[in-house]
Image (cartoon, helix red, strand yellow):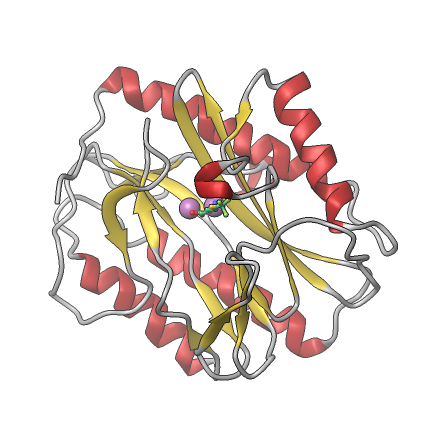
Length: 263
Ligand code: MF3
Ligand code: CO
Ligand code: CO
């Protein structure tokens, strides 16, 4: 496995790409409402990337993916293909955007509520967000990836939810999915030790029911086998000498947390 350490110039380019992904997720949050289709979400994000950001939507034609973003509604775990599906009040939807700017990828996803979700749906989305941040806050040089996965897994399972095993976070840079794999479960002390200059995503997928998933015949859409609700949040992080810099903070996160989590 080749883990790529980013130079300061590459880190700067990834900061720009990460910011564009976050800006698009901020933008689309203003538009989510009952009655719109997942295809409408794709159109708005595609235009924003191309016309406003002068960037390329990385998913489009990536290994044959037909659209510019992934939209994963309710029991869809990830990689939902935007189309005619209409959002209704009470739905939860993950929107996953990846831009390419000056050759570098920015990848992030969030959960959005359509109208008012029920208590379980809200708790699932919030637990997933908290699990992501519990992982982020551990990141520093020397951390073993097993500790990161273990922290996410134990928190999620203590809430009565399950962690999807088949998909993981990944190294990212000029290449969308670099070799480095970030599992969202694990054993303390095991796995690769982090080094300053690594950039990767953390993107836990958690289910209200059992962890098992199924791939639909379209070859992309991943759903929970038991049809329970699923949630995902994704940030792109840089390992720094001081700890971690989150490259995909949205407007609200930037106001709440500031850029350095472990100063
Ligand atoms: N953005 C997804 C990730 O977090 C990957 C989507 S690949 C696609 O890794 F082809 F489905 F777009
Ligand atoms: Co993504
Ligand atoms: Co990703």
